[in-house]
Length: 339
Image (cartoon, rainbow, N blue to C red; front, side, top):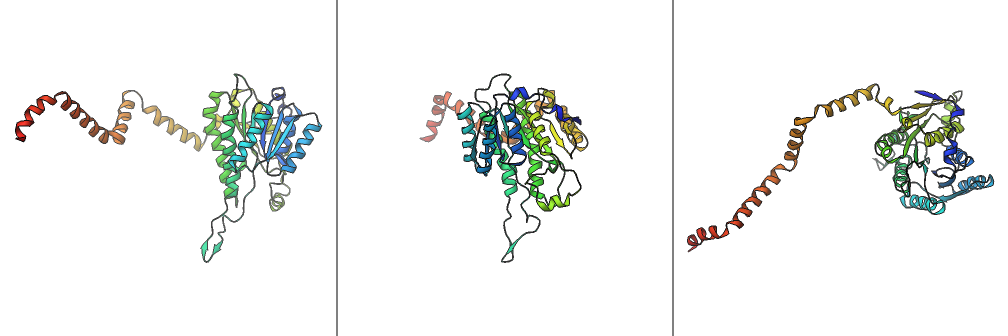
């Protein structure tokens, strides 16, 4: 891992001037700070949040500083509302360049203590998954369409996802939150394989507990004396992840483990420890299958899947073709037998 001092987080700020940032959950907290930072460097900002009044307040703050912004009420679990958000950005500003699916919530209680009704367990709420992961997937899916519209070679196009330290470790009594944030990291790693070929950056930000409304009061009390991650530094990590010109940082993870600096974990370092063992075995399996052996295994699998039905069809087709070409001979042989 490499640490990044604060004075380097905005070194590519000239790249966002005139660009369009679409961000969810930016009425407060990390999202608000990120929106204001991007706007301060000339980006045009579009916010989607269920707290429309809060989002509009951020818009007024940006406009009051000479910037351009817009907001719309958006429940990220509603795909159609997300489409409206992206349509607002594209129709108003003519482009979507940087997308940050920031909307998220903490753990919805009750998963580890099933509620009973008439002696039987009641279906648990999966709202944490629906917002933190499903909502992010909707935003990412739409980003892949709208960022490609009118895209030119060399354009700044970035998708920055919000993970957590919970993307890497289990949080006690945070089963759903941990699951959602593990999923976010997996989404980033999968998308990188596709997006880097299309000139779109992707990254995942992993803050420790930050002093925002998403962290419940009991958790803050439990963390008393432990330094929380500064919200401004998280926003800076989002900014650098979106704007960095180094292709080696594409697909990287950006960690904020305490109140110290941002650490970048290059994608190559995801292949160490147990991950390295898994990667080595997968590559060894692929590497062994080469040349004639590869073709033998390929056709063996094809035969296993469709071979017998295909063979029957092929034999029937061959017999039908032969019979048609020799129908007169066959008729001459069969006709006397029918008399």
